[in-house]
Length: 212
Image (cartoon, rainbow, N blue to C red; front, side, top):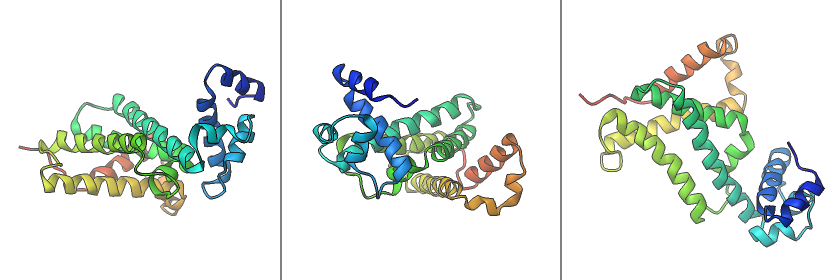
């Protein structure tokens, strides 16, 4: 639920202005897109002075960078929810991680694009770098659980990581762009059938094989 100006100002007095600005920034990003994003627009949505966002984030780049870092944290939580409901089998966990990836993209397309394809964020920012690395490490761990080999030291296992990532990310990007509507049979499936097909695509993304 969006906060009223009175609620936002009250939050400011309780030290929550930063969180209120991030909420407003996500709405601004969703409504306007990254190219039209502005601190002035965020301030207006939050019901605070035009100077308030700059006080906390310096500039639009700083605010977008903080928003992207939070996005990665939510991204991981979405994947964890999928995995919680899936079989503990390593391949089922990998497929669930991929479905969580798609879930997040479909629910947050503007934020997803900001995180993965925008040049408007500061990639060297410590919080963003830590959050994005955590998301990548999660995929690495799932591949390692299957191959029993550390992708950071085994080039073949890292190839599996990159193959799965490329396919899952491409699938998510195609879906939020509406491109999969061309695949008409997908549109006629129920949720369980569609997710079974998507899981199959994710697991076909590489030659990932369990270690003997």
